[in-house]
Image (cartoon, rainbow, N blue to C red; front, top):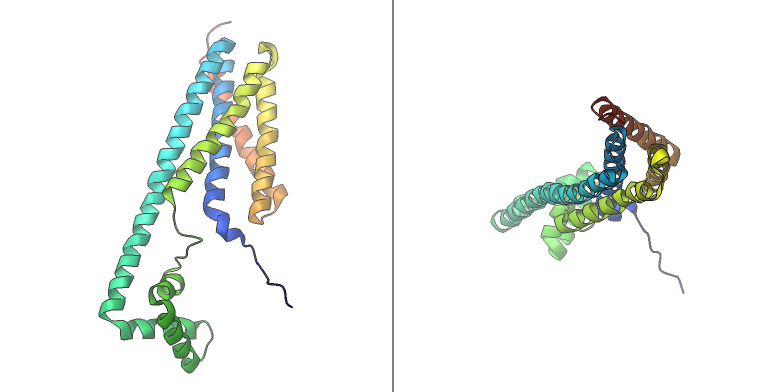
Length: 231
């Protein structure tokens, strides 16, 4: 008896993975930069934490709203294409058959086989065949606004909690290097894990994330020091 062969493809998780990684990365970078910038301005540790918590809440809500609006726009576009395709199937079925057959012929099938495949697939699920092969819309890649918004907000909050926890537990004298160092290490790990999950090179991803995050933190700290109060 042959065992069934199950394949797991990374494209099935591309939507929530992108939103989660983006949210966690932004949470760490934004909050760590905010904490470092405020700390560099010689503000008390309590006020640094208040600013960081405010940044966490504002950032999580902003990520959720932005992701929801963005992905919902994609979903609206997809739905409009689906409605249009459904209407075309009702009003001009013959042209849709020829269109689908032409797609398969362009992928390497001969004309007769392409027509046969198009006929059989449209008899089974005409709309699904056109959505998948003509428009590139499938269940795995279809936009999900609520899922993306929740993933972004949650991952942002989790990411932002890291530099806040370090800032709360670190002595004031070493708060800046502790927040900066731990944040960069975690960002490098996050970049590597995300690359691993997506099938990309881990080292390059980790270096890329670390470099741009360090630049953001450094610039924010410099602004804080430039406009800070006297000790």
